[in-house]
Image (cartoon, rainbow over all chains, first blue to last red; front, side, top):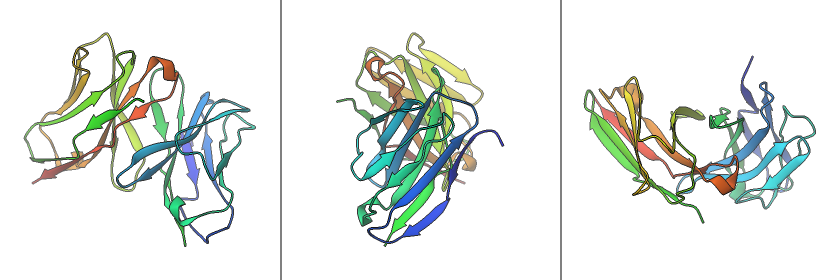
Length: 111
Length: 112
């Protein structure tokens, strides 16, 4: 299916575990983004990527790692999950001026 | 830094018009966007306006841009219960390249 796909849709993990959230887009958009959405904070940018092998920090990068070996994939890894990382995570892609296309989100709970 | 402000909540009756307001800070912003988020879903692009335009209409949606006051509004005509959602305004400052700055969102509740 064409579009941007996030997996898993829901994830529960324990404090201290490593967890990876996947994001895949089928358009070959150059830009990809990871946001977290929390009540009272709106959307906060974690990391973004302008192209394969080019990534940069956003507003709240601590505790997260990204990679982009292929244009279509942009996984986000929580190296050692903490309760403060409980959130809804959105991946987005973009090309040109048309704004972002968002995935459906991953709801992550750290217990 | 950049900041986009929106009112938190708006409640309207079905059939009325809704107007959601937004103020942004960067006069260099080339594009401004409106996104809609329904419960449990991602953000969906509703419409966008180029900074050299004052108004854009798309079916029930009208976007007004006042560059002097850095004010953007989204008017939804004949609001329906299916319009209940969170609406996000976003700006694209020139120096940010392809990054957008989002507001915190306005919750629109439509009463039948």
